[in-house]
Image 1 (cartoon, helix red, strand yellow):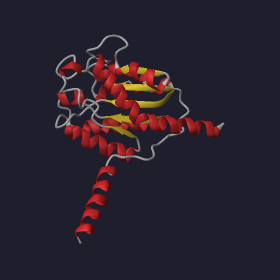
Image 2: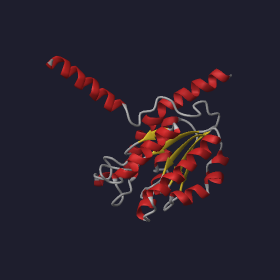
Image 3: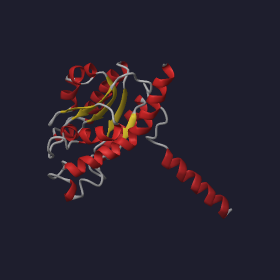
Length: 213
């Protein structure tokens, strides 16, 4: 009986660890776009670091693909949504990495509105034929509610979910330029986290495109 209980606990633990936000397939895996678009606010823009020290610049060296930074410092999801055509859809995206919520939180935008705006971003991008990766900037209890909502949204919309990109950064002064924003070393760490999350899908995209030839 004890042996059975132990086996049951192990199996249950595995199911818990592999459930939730884990996604095996995402929409538009065969996207024919040419660019990775990094779409967000100050974290994407690279606030607190010098030119070429933002996470999209570091990411470009890892993926060996064109990476475009369309982050704007201070943007809320509603402000970001207004520029989705000129800054994102008109740039021939293959993959769009969405990173928002921080300014919505600071301006006390209702979470339902934030989630709705991001959902609309995803819908427009996917209708344009590109893959989507949804980035979560929570760390521990900080913005935990957003992490849960974004996880559910990512699962519903079949997009890549990248949780906790600021984990290990907001608690380490050597990786920050102020109370929240990373410095160059912090942005490099973010780029590495994002690369690990999107790399399998970039490989699948390459295979899908080659199969079409």
